[in-house]
Length: 458
Image (cartoon, rainbow, N blue to C red; front, top):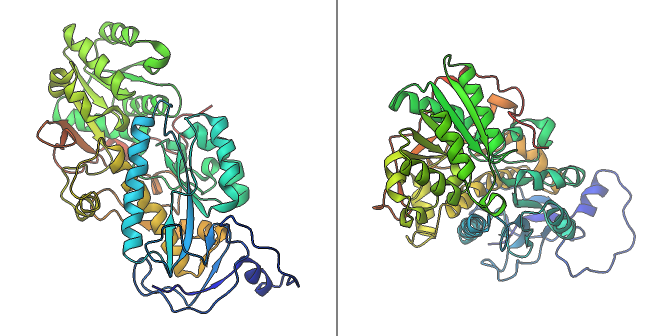
């Protein structure tokens, strides 16, 4: 498919009244796209945008030249960066499948023709930042001149380390983290395309589900890593308790086993508090240890696990019987067992072969908002960074039934997702879990204060 007539960044500036440069600079070998020249081509009629304009402004991160190993050699190329934890960091086991899911999603889009005559490349500027803020910032500086946007920036603290630079460069990004602060422009400058709920919201709605499906808890323990993950989740637990009288909250901070060695202190603290339900915001290994040891000690309560707590490999662990009997996993969207059109498309892209864990599903889901924003920008005839940024407030992410559709033109509850799917461990499913009922939204969400981030990240 041929792409629409592109307008380079220099040409667009001239059209706006800027001085036209008399000479042409040497062509750089990096695909920044910043000095591409206009060239007549046919308009795009398939793939991403159905009615793309005949002229599209392009700039940094977009080239008329095809992507490396292009699906459509006549298309130009949109370069998206990925900053993730791909080798030795604490989230590598989840992050690698996330990238795989993103790669599958964009391959599907390219095979359908791309977006307005451009294929999407996420591989050229993928970097392993090992979940270290300093490495994240350094890698961002290395790839920034050559990308249009970030398809993934993993970790809230890591993302915050580059947000000011993203703001200066008009770089939009999709986070692989679920901090409540992303729903507020004062925190994300309108640059962050979150997908699904926040950890804070997850805890609020999950406790409503527990109340309706078990009993109203009189005591709740919130166990998690401090900061944007466990801290955000614990804040949600407290917000739920604030609007549901008669519930005592015990917060038990912990860290990954790489830091703490084990979770014995957590087990002792939870056993002493004797809660009706424990809200977990830790990793899968810590989840198995906490649930298994408490069950072995005679604990009679239940567990609600945040999105990152689950891995199907836990069903092969010694904690499997306890997990099946006492634990529910909370998810923002359908998993492998889902029946929506979105899940069907994801399975087709994976040749109906289940991935190693739910990271793949996260990667697929988190690609939808960026796709929506790029299509919106193309429809408006502006695939420059500024054009993509301007499109954020007008785009809507359509998950085709797989998750709750999202928009980004508002603040707090106006844009925050407040629906969950509750999952139950089950070996019959390739991903080790099945949904318990349909999407759920409880009564407490409308009562809680969600006018600012539930917790600071510093």
